[in-house]
Length: 114
Image (cartoon, one colour):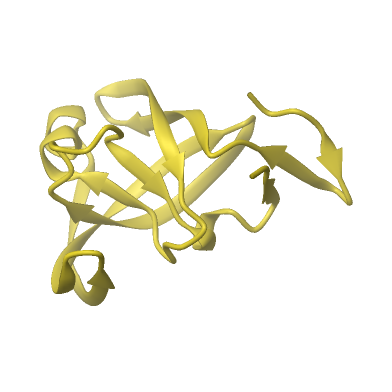
């Protein structure tokens, strides 16, 4: 879905395919690009299924559902040909359309097309 480059940054849409890499293999899903979220987040059940490495570290954060404490995981994924290593938060997203959201922290080399 990526369209072009502008000022050395790739222009992406609000939903993009990403490939997540774990010890169990690679998994391709559609993720919501969320410029309102600082940190990337992934569904807990999906993360367990694909074998993501959970960290002992927890963070306190604000979300649409209020303040929460969430565990983090190491997440390595590819977005529009760029490999990104991140610490993502784990959340209950099974009721959501997308199993992952990509936050601003991992979007430094991209522009998001409205």
